[in-house]
Image (cartoon, rainbow, N blue to C red):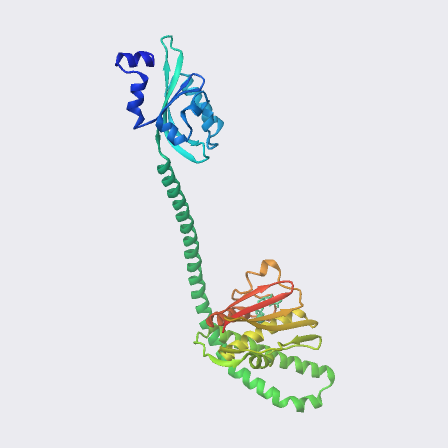
Length: 374
Ligand SMILES: Nc1ncnc2c1ncn2[C@@H]1O[C@H](COP(=O)(O)OP(=O)(O)OP(=O)(O)O)[C@@H](O)[C@H]1O
Ligand SMILES: [Mg+2]
């Protein structure tokens, strides 16, 4: 049965229907080609077009670009096939703003079953859609937060496992190092005492052997000190002290050679720090640089400060650190040297962090940067 005859039967005409629907729905009627032949007040309000502007226009006028051609094709196939279509559509109003409508399109046939009109009844769901988008956004953010929290937890747990392992290694190593330290000190002392007498008796070849022996004792001392430093969890003991004075003392533990120029900073700063520990940090960084230079090159130590931090840079003209090792050099036991413990930088990092600072590294030129709070 056609729309008009249905209405007639109910004793209603289109304007009666409009009055009923006007307050509740956003309604249009189009002809069978989609040309708007009727638009109610609510439709004009939401689309911001006047009735005159709408009549005679194709419904495409309101296309927002949100939906694909496929979407419209499906809609059109459904209604032109005589079936109702239900769905949500995003439209564009005259002023360019967008609105969402929950839509039912009903084809209305004449007595020959030819489609005469399409009646579309809509409800404004823009607010719901906005809420939905906000919810989706919040959900996405939550998902991201969850992921980053999970990553943090995984990292922390692996840190805990690592720290536990390190603590065990540390206890064992420090016991051994401690037991070795006394006999080594005796060896060191006697070797030093005997040096003048022995040197006067040895030819140049044997003299070299003697120096190598002494160097080895020096190396062992350094390694033992590193292990003990690593194992020590003692609190830091902060005092105000000149950085240059610490640097000069640390140079006593540096084994440089003639081909290497070490430039110290020309300025100085008073640091509030554990003198002995920072001395250890500097000597390890400088010894690393000396080792990297392999007898030839320059090490440049510089100092700069702002209102909060002092920045210490140890730069060397050596070959740098291969990219694949960049992440590993601060891990315990990572070394590329035959006699290294691979603890040097781990100890440096933990000491610097104990002072509330941080240490980082970059290549070209190889530069270790320490930032300490003033
Ligand atoms: N200035 C540098 N240039 C190139 N590589 C470096 C430099 N400093 C450190 N490295 C690399 O980082 C590794 C780890 O250094 P770290 O000080 O922790 O241990 P190590 O020097 O190998 O051993 P140890 O400190 O016990 O002598 C070194 O083996 C080396 O490969
Ligand atoms: Mg080192």
